[in-house]
Image (cartoon, rainbow, N blue to C red; front, side, top):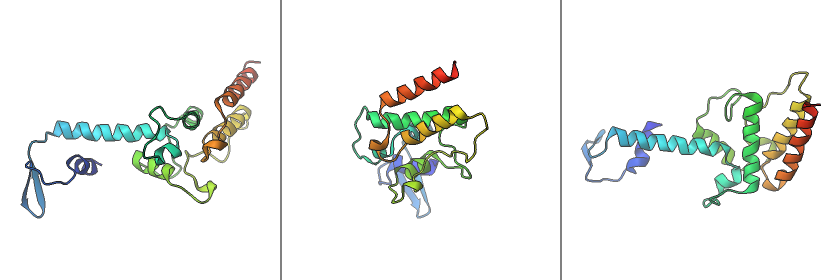
Length: 169
């Protein structure tokens, strides 16, 4: 929210720019609305970019600057979900979550692997979704919680080539 962006921006330190009139208000000098809005926009963009980031990289305080191949596989699965359902990144069944809430849920370590947070996948698909069943399985294994359980890029390329051949027969 704008309030949390503001608090992050100011870090609630008393500076010469903060003038406390009474205990219920703070007047701010030396800060333009434009700079505050720019900071807020950068915060939202940063969080939005994290929606495609693998959970192990979100949890890592010093993630590799270029990411990892297994992290890229996770991102591929999120993009594949977007392509298959055309609902945007991380649609949720009955919730309207902010990028921050989504990132926090993906990042959270869970005891039961059935409780990991991923984009909503409908229980039933259309009758002519034979290809989608294969893509669905590829998507699910590509966003596995444990990076070692995700396929490598050669397996994904092979699966996609096979699906392309089947489609164009």
